[in-house]
Length: 108
Image (cartoon, rainbow, N blue to C red):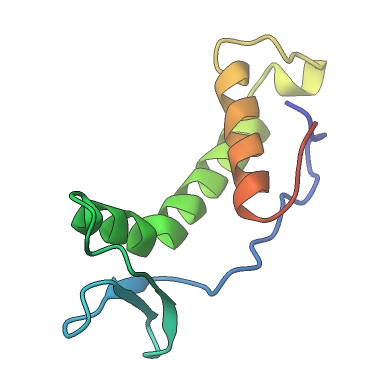
């Protein structure tokens, strides 16, 4: 892992979820207050429905990944010993990079 135990993980800067698909405009995604988060001119693509569903699920996916990564690293018995080569460390490192990318930051 690249962050020491107890370090605050990257904070999201996006509109907090959950997001939902529009009932009337199939390529629009709204937050829970009804504000439009995003819209796209992607209806011409073959897989546009799948793309919109993925966008709508993004905040919940990110939150779950952040919680899992924090809980795992904080609970890892080898983490306190400086282990970065444990069975799941390579996954946690990859997850931290994805979280940073989603939050507009970069972990080297």
